[in-house]
Amino acid sequence: MQKDFHYYATYCAAYLAGFSHEECMELCYSAQFVDLCSASLLTKLNGPKAAATTQLQLELMDSPADILSLQNITRIWASFHFLPGDLYAAKPKCSKSYLQKYRLICRPNGELLVRTVERAKGSSLQAAGIAMHVLADTWAHQNFAGTPSLVINNTDSWFFELLPDDASGEGGYKRRRITFRPNPSMKDDLENSVYQNSLFQNNENSIMNLGHGRAGHLPDYSFIRYQYLPAWGEYEAITKDNPSDYLHAFTQMIEAMKFLRGEREAFLPETYDLAAIEPYRERIDRIIKTRRADACEDWKAFGEELSGQVIEDFDLEKYQEEYMSARGDAKDGTFLGRFFLAAMAQKSLVTNAIYRSGNKLAGYSVDYSVKGFRGIRDYRSLLDAVIKKEGHR
Amino acid sequence: MTIFQRIRSVIIALVMILSGVLMLCLPDIGYAVAALILSISLLLYGIRTLIYYFTLARHMVGGRGILYIGIVVLDLGIFTLTVADNMEIYILLYLLAFRLFSGLVDILRALEARRYESPGWKSKLAVGIVNILMALLALAAGIVFRSEELLVVLYCAGLFGSALARIATAFRKSAIVYIQ
Image (cartoon, rainbow over all chains, first blue to last red; front, side):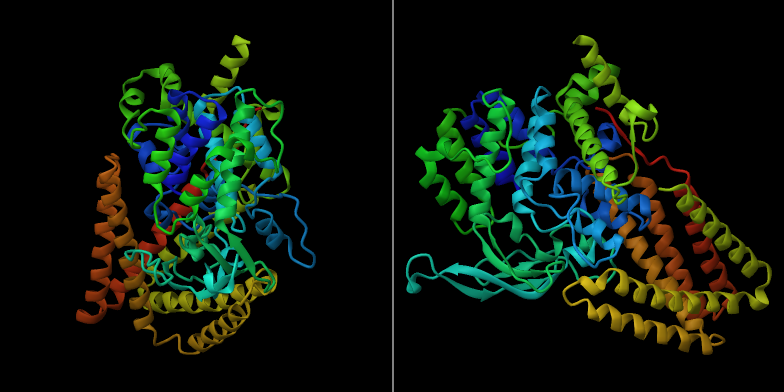
């Protein structure tokens, strides 16, 4: 997903869930910031590197092909963009190394998603924003894994777009072959179904095989429906219906945020607040289904109509000065400080779950309550924050 | 990273350093050793690709292509071993491709880091320039001066760099702390 959904649509969902305009702004800013909080940015801010929630293309190209870098990539992408759907999924007659990768495939409504949303409850708005980013991406990025893997993330050249076919009657589709070009400078040609994707690399751990790179930006477009053969799918075609998935994501976000506000007792998987969007159903459907690369304008207009307030454009530098000028412990109380703590908490949660399932692809996780503090030093600030919070209680 | 992986990383790094020192101290056989290392690398890559096919890629849609690549590379490795005494061009190509690519990526990364006002961009740029200079030097050594010794020195410099990076990686803290 991109800014149109993570920023503007998240604002709309938060408002429909009952948050105030100011709270919605903090929440959607955090949701969008997940796509921008890279190690390069953290270096500039002098923030904790362990709080990185994404990696720039050149950061990925620059990372050495050693096991630590692969674990770091997996931690970031599995925790924030490709949340594993079932860490104990079964697949007969395959090796352990294959199974470990297979189990990282992202799917909506998994146990980890419930834990992600539950973890955000009672925490900051930044934690809520991060959880909404993760939730939304489980719909868009499903069937791909947040680890570099040719055998999981590659796609066959058999790739078709499903276009509404008026001639065939109500609800019919015609297929049009999709052409992919691994040219980073080209723009997607929506009219002719020519899309950019990552270069085919037969190296299992190449960063070209991370996430949905081989399927280009298709998972990030809300309007598109397509059929393809995923590398892991044993030659069975998958039909991806993004309009339906995006609607599910939107209504599940409302449900989750109602839980975060205390309006629901529990966050249950496969529960969608369709009633909340009933008065706006046609409008939302139209925004989602309109064929274009970016729906920011329409989501923004819808959000502003809902709240009667101006939704300011996303400004990456908005909170940077506040963080950089804060001293010592006061940094954790700033907007970005709270975001960094929430990001480390999410990464810690997902890495621990993957590690406990017997899977080392995201690296080692040391349980503080059992073994004390060992490992990456950045997590000390998360520990201090937790101790402080417990002390207040 | 497991303790075994850390130990393995350090041992490989030490072997790399030792090979580099050997090549520099014994210039008569240095060139042949470098050529042998390249041939064996090709052979090992072929074997690794076949193992990759049987453990992972056989489950993949279109995975049979990996099997064919493995067989072809293995065959190529065996072939190059038989002509290892005449491989100047392979070392030159290896040095050129590797250094040029690394240099370009480093420079692009430096420009990106500069855009983000990240303080490390100057050192990154310097590393990129050094890599490109080494590629040009390899080109000059191979084509202009026809100096086998200089090619070996450049190859060894790359070996030492990779070995040091491996040792640094082996001692990095890597565990994620889980705090409930």
